[in-house]
Amino acid sequence: MRKTMQCKAAPELEIISGEESILLRFNISMWANLQDTDEGLEALKEASVSETCALIVWAAGKDNNDDFTLEKARALVSGMDVSNVSEIINIFSDSVGMDIDKLDNAQKKMILQIMKAAVKN
Image 1 (tube, rainbow, N blue to C red):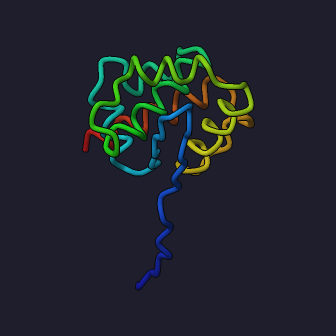
Image 2: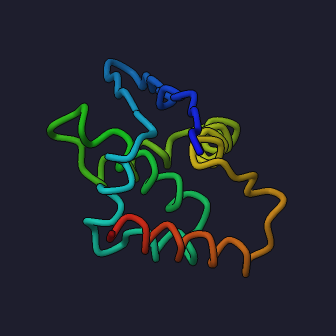
């Protein structure tokens, strides 16, 4: 049986803070970046909203910004408006095809475990 798939481009978001501009790409490389950290996908399960957002910003921005560190992402997120943080998390959720607001904690953990296993393989 033949299937056809319409390829979607990875979402991008440019964050401008003062003189600095950071391009975030919500693609498979972002997942690899999350997997390569001690915090990784496991941290997304238990992290605060600001830490979750910082991990997402770092992972999505790392490949496009050579000197972008998790500490810089945390500092950037700590100065953001709540609506900006919410938008970043929503773009992340949309990029992986899930509506986080409709999931309970057990479902979120299960999805993250599946994603972690998929990234390892």
